[in-house]
Every structure is written in structure tokens, then in C-alpha cells.
Image (cartoon, rainbow, N blue to C red; front, side, top):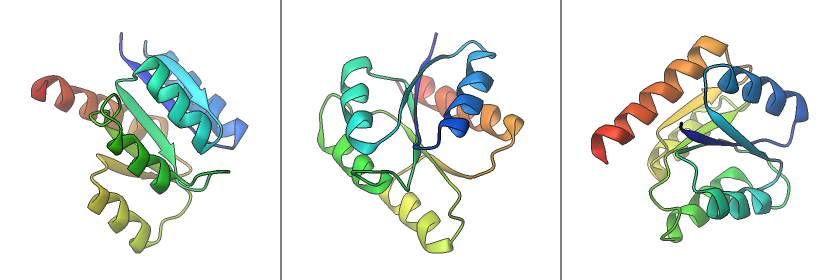
Length: 126
């Protein structure tokens, strides 16, 4: 069973995404700020992280860079999730090496298809 960490400071979004992913059989953990995200990622070694950009303490880009500097978490694929749809944010996510970028509100089918695709890619490369 794949483990997914969702990082978002909006409780409603955490609940909706968690419910959608759990209903498909994923094991889901959540974090509501950047520091908690780094702690949880190191603790549970998720197979995938859904990472918001606008977060308290550390923003999503800072969290991503910190994850990639840590040997234990450097290989975890990340999908950015954000209400920000500006081209520069999407481009920055791509340049950092994120697997995808989903703009909120995220449709359940888009979420599940993207998650499945990224996890499958990881299995093929691992």
C-alpha cells in the first residue's frame, strides 16, 4: 500500500484530498506547515508528497529543497498543489524537479490519475 503525505495549511483541503486518496486504498498522512512536513517525511518515508506552496513557517519551495538535501527523503517524488496558477510558480516547480503541479480546486479524477501516474513511474524506475 502506497504512503502519501499531504501538506496543506487549509484543513478543508487536507480532508478532501485525504478522503479521496484513502477511498482508493492509499495510506495517507497529513502536515499543515513546512516544518511538520519535513519531520513527517523523514519519519514515515512516504512514496509521494502532495505539497502546497503557500505554507506557514517554510513555503513549499523551501520544503522541497530541504527534502532534496536529505538523503532519506531526496528520492521522494513531489506533486505541488496550489491555488497559485501563475506561470512563474509552475515553471519554478518544474525547474526544481517536481513531478507535477495541480491547481486548486483539484478535481478528484485529476488528483487520482496524477498520483497513480507518478507512483507508477516511481515503481518503473525503482
